[in-house]
Amino acid sequence: MLDIIPHIQYLVTCNDCVVLPGWGAFIASHVSAYVSDGIMYPPSRVIGFNPSVNHDDGLLVASVVRRESMPYQAAKAAVAAGVDQLRNLYDIAGFVAIPRIGTLRRDKDSNTIFTPAADSIASAEFMALPAMEVAAAVPDSVNEGEKVTRISGIRAFGRVAAAVAVLVGLGITLSTPVLVDRESNHFASIPAPAVTAAKTITLPSVEATNEDFYIAKPDSSAIETVVIPAEAPKFVPEASYYLIVSSHSNIGEAKKFVEMHQGDNLTIFESDNRYRVVAATGATFEEARSLKADTGFSSRYPDAWVLRR
Image (cartoon, rainbow, N blue to C red; front, side, top):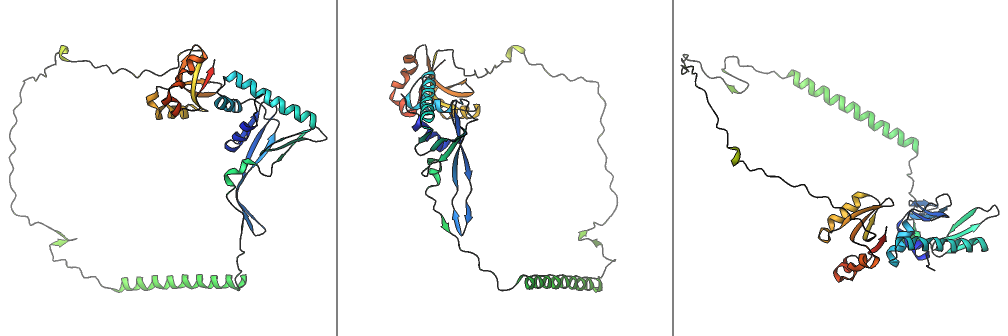
C-alpha cells in the first residue's frame, strides 16, 4: 500500500491547506514576530486540523501522480486507501501520530483533537531565526509634567517670534519708496517701438475661375489585397491519455508557463478545475508516455506524468 505520509509532510511545508479526503484538513496559520517578557520571538506557522474541510481538492492526489508516475484514477484510489489506513489506526487506538506534523486524538466526546509536533515541519522556513533578548528602554529623568511644560513654552515662543518677523518685514516693505519714471518710453522692461508713417500694403488680386479639378482614381486591378491570417488557437486534441508537464489553478499561470517553453509546442487542458499543460497525447498510456524516453525532454520535465480521461 502506498505511504501517503511523505506527501502530506511535503505539501504542509508549501500549502496552507492540505485535505485528507473524507476526514479533514491540516490548515496553517501565520504568527507574526512578537515580544514577551523581554524576549523577541521570530515569526512561525502553526498547524491546526479542521474536520469540516474534508472535500477532495485533488492536491494530495496530484502529488502522488507526480512522484509515483501513476494515472490519476489510480493515484486517487491510492490516496483513499492511505487515508482509510490512518482512519483505521485512529479508530482502533484512539489516536494516530503523523511524524513532523502532529497527533490526532479522540476525546471523551468523540471529537478530534490535534496537537502539533514539537519539531513540526510547518515552520521549517523560520527554524534558522532564533529568539533574541530585547533590552528595555531607559526612561528619561524628566517627569511627564515638566516635558509638557517645556514643549508648550517652546511652541509659544516660536509663534511669537514668527509674528514679530512678519510685522518687521511688512513695515520695511511699506516704508520703502518706489520711484516711477513716467517719462521713459520703456515699461515692464519691454521696449516700445517708435511709430513713423503708415505703409500701404497691396494684396494680389484673385480672379474667380470655373475650372474643375479631378483626382485620378487608382486602378482597382493594381491594388493588392493583403489578408493577415489570424493566429490559430492552440487546442488539445481529443485523446484518452495526456502527458502533463505542469498543473495550475488558473489560466494565467498556465499561459505564462507555455510562453516560457514556446519551443516545446505545449497546449493547455482544463479538467477538474485545474489548467494542465500538455506535451503529448495518445490513445494508450504507453503512447502518451513515449515522449519521456527523449533525454532532452526528461531533463526539462522530470516530473511529467500521464493523465487518463
